Length: 375
Image (cartoon, rainbow, N blue to C red; front, side, top):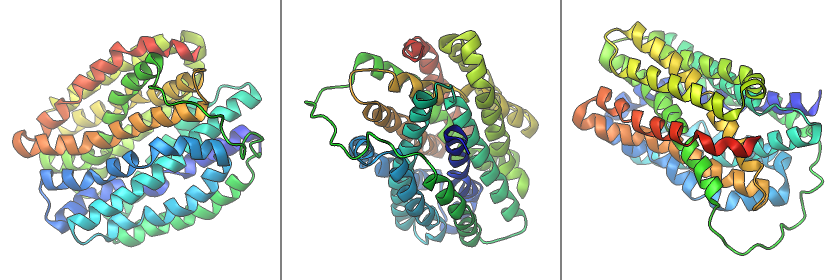
C-alpha cells in the first residue's frame, strides 16, 4: 500500500471509537444528573488536556517523528477513549476527558505531520482527502454508537469494543509507514518568538470552524432530544448526517482547491456554514435541523485541512511547530465551544447557545484571505 493510502487509512481508523462516544453524551448526562452548565464544566476537561499538551508536542513530534507518534499514540488513545463512559461522578468525567484531550491531540498532531510529509514526499495533494477519511471514521463511529444506543448496549462496553477492534488494524497500518529520515535529530535551537501574523491569521480562520465542529459533536444529540423530543437512533442521527457531509466536502476539497483556489473555496464554504447554522437555530421541525446540520457540514468541511497546509507551508519555523500551534488553536476551538454553549443554554436555552456560533463563523469567513500561504 502506498504512503498516501496508508495515511488515509489511519485517518479513517483514528476517530471511530471517539465517534461512538458522541451519541452517548445525553445518556451520561442523564446518568450523572447533570444540567447544561454542569455538563459544560465536565466537557472543559478536554480543553484542559490540550492546553497542557500541544505547547510541547510539536517539539516532541519533530524529534521522534510522526510515525512513532502515531504508533504509540494509538495504543494510549485506545485505552483512554474508553474512560469517560465509566465515569460515575462529574469530577471523574472531567479527569477522563482531560486525559482524552492529551491523547487525542498528540495523536492527531502526528497524523497531520504525516499527511504533510506524504504530500511533500510524493508531490500529491491529499490533505483534504485525509481529513475526509477522518470524517468518515467519526461518522462510522457515530452511526455505530447510535446503533448501540438503539439496541441498549451499555456505553462502557460499546466504546471499548470499538476501540479494541480498531486498534490492531491501526497498528499494522502505522508500522508500515515509511520512516522519517529527519526524526531523531534534535531540532535546531530557536529562540522563543511569538507566532507570525500569518500563522495567527490562519489560526483565527480555523478557530470558528473547529468551534462549530465541536459544538455539533457534543450538542447535536442533546439539541434534537431536548428541542424536538427525538429518541432512540434519531437522537444521534444529526451528527451522523453532519459528519457525512463533512466527509463529502473533504473528498472533493483537493480537486476544488486546485480548480478554484484555497481562498475562493474557503469563502464559498464559509457562506454555506452560516446559512446552515441559521437553519439549525431557527428550525421549526427536526427535519429542518437535519438539513441545517448537513449544510454546516459542507461549510466547515475543508477549513481545517486548508489551514494545516497553509501553516505547514510557512517558513518561519519547522512545519511540526507551526502545525502544533495551529492544532492547539483548532482543538481548543473544538473543545471550548461545547462548554461555552452549555453555560449559555443553562440561562437562555440551546437555540440561543447554538446561535453564538454565528459570530466565530463570521470571523472565520473574514480571515479566509490568510490562506494565501497554502498556494
